[in-house]
Image (cartoon, rainbow, N blue to C red; front, top):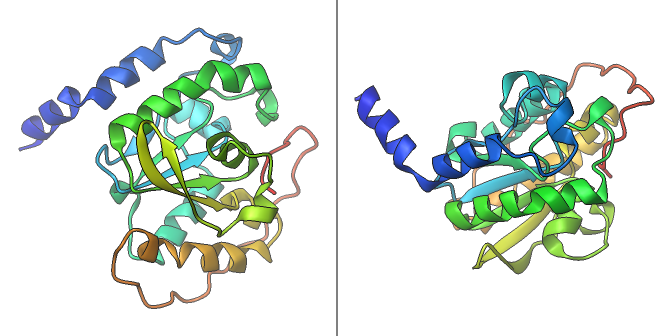
Amino acid sequence: MEAAAAATELAHPLSVLHAEVAACTRCALAKSRTQVVFGAGSPDADLMFVGEAPGFHEDKQGVPFVGAAGQLLGKLLAGIGLRREDVYIANVLKCRPPGNRDPLPEEIEACESHLFRQIELIRPKVVATLGNFATKLLSGKPLGITRVHGMEQEVVLGGSRVVLYPLFHPAAALYTPRMLDVLQGDFARLPELLGREVVPPAPALTLAPAPEPTPQVQLGLF
């Protein structure tokens, strides 16, 4: 059974794209990365999350959202009856910017076609953007996440019409606990946008105190 599942996965066009992106040298990040962080989850997901860029742990493991923000994302998904395996998670950039700095315009330009191709192959119903960079890129508008979070819009991505749903990046709640209620409230609407039965409200999440962000970390979270 496992061998059959592995063969199916290898046959999926997303796996072919993964192999291509793993060898990408379009920008200078190819020289500093440990490995490409392509994406993870179901290749047939109705819901796709798009973040900003890999961080330290993602760069080491090759999987998106495996640090503290990823753990919170998993809890938020569980609160609406979903698992990481049910969705697809990717980033605008596939390589970690040194020091977790903001992506540069030329890096986004070099990498964005990989993301659009992922969306084309997965064909999600809803694309939830996490933070400023993903929201501005996929909406094609300059409005920041503070203005548009929780406000869905129909857009064409990867040749298909999808619902774009901007959300604060989970890391925002790690450093600003009041953002957790906002995130939970916005996540609660995802089942409705997916056309699924609405899950009863989840108990409020609580977070352990987060360390102060270092000056080098400049995420487009708000």
